Length: 123
Image (cartoon, rainbow, N blue to C red; front, side):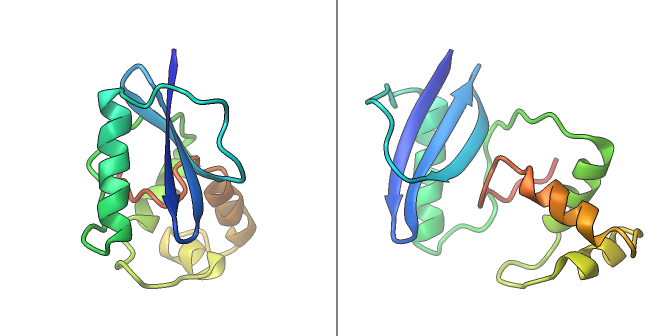
């Protein structure tokens, strides 16, 4: 059963979805869904860590994550998590870092499928 949590931030409303005590999605949403129970411990923990992140006191999250990755997505997301906090890289630069210099569009596609929005998590 899905459990939901919501956090209002300066940059928008964030929805957290947890299944089987593991975070499966953290995304920005336009409106809050019908009121859902957010007392689940995994939801509460994620909400706390997000609040600390937005207070600029956290850069790496410690959450139980459940994602289905392709090997290429895992490679892209793993390398993304090694980028120094606050640093920007474009898709071409990231493609070069993972050893696929001509795969900038594939890198962009992999990142667009990341259901964790701002959560920095190393698989």
